Amino acid sequence: MGTQGQKDMAWRLIALVLLLAWTAPTCRARVRTDLLNVCMDAKHHKAKPGPEDKLHAQCTPWRKKACCTVSTSQELHKDTSRLYNFTWDHCGKMEPACKRHFIQDNCLYECSPNLGPWIQEVNQSWRKERILQVPLCREDCEQWWQDCRTSYTCKSNWHRGWNWTSGVNKCPARTTCRTFEAYFPTPAALCEGIWDHSYKATNYRRGSGRCIQMWFDPAQGNPNEEVARFYAGARNAGVMPQGIEHLLLSLAPMLYLWLLGRV
Image 1: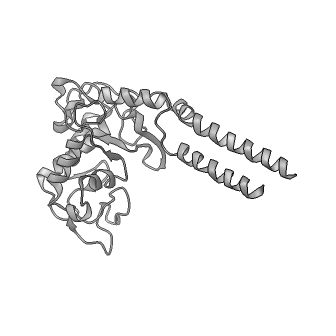
Image 2 (image 1 turned 90 degrees about the vertical axis):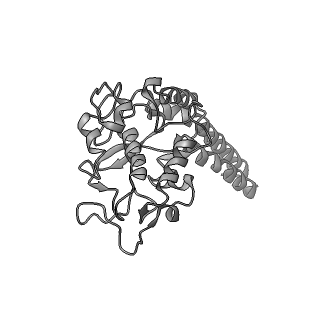
Image 3 (image 1 turned 120 degrees about the vertical axis):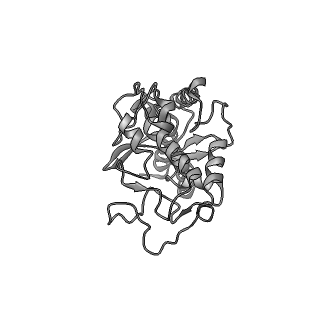
């Protein structure tokens, strides 16, 4: 192939990359169009959300439309739940003020039908989907960190790396129990790091319609319904790139530089 032919081929490749980057959000939205009122394909989630009038304690805000069952909500309140054999007390007794945030976090994860815009496919034995970068309200993140900063842990990412030889999560070898503040120096470090970027720390306030609330008064309605509608609409409109578009766009200048080098 001559120089002109190579140039033509490079320009075609650049055009193709830009086209793929432009259409990727739309194609992704077609993969999962049910972004509202949905449950994740995960171990303890129901297939579809529905009423659960007897949800336990902190999970009651979701009783009118829940992805969790009553028994699941009860297990979420135990120090060592049979759901995942996970204990909060891996570095001594976790303080109650801190533990309530993890219970609420789990209630949101297991029970909420409003996380559809952030559901991603995964290849794990216990679930086929997870949430990624759910925008968490500033107050929820900051209060979580404030109430947990003096409790103890031995890891900054609780999604992986535990010692499971006893059947329950234990601190891995060569780790040290330190305060949460030592492992998570800022609220954002806690909220984003602890569950491997399931959440994204934001400056949005409760009631803004732009962030998910862990804590809300169900008597005033569920504010997360409005938030899910906003982000579902944005995603379906193709204005929420989540990774592949950035990769594709980064290839275009590389191809262009390659083209210049071939001239």
